[in-house]
Length: 95
Image (cartoon, rainbow, N blue to C red; front, top):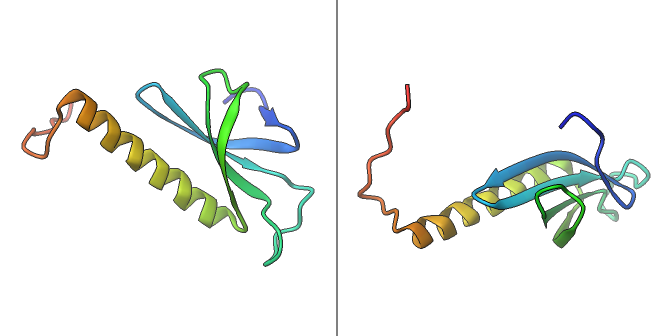
């Protein structure tokens, strides 16, 4: 990402694209990171990162990164089912 993207007070610091799904991780530096606050969030978003929804809020960067990956795996499984991709298919390196 070349330009800084924001959703409210949250700066988008990571994105993950799976098929046509865009997942984003945001951080609000104005919220202190401690046991009582949630300065990190993951969302599903539209392609140009102007509409965010289904937020999962987290207390630490690691927890948010973990959630981002988990949501990504869920999208992979969804698209696998949709496209008929099964464990019997062999994946090949495109080299």
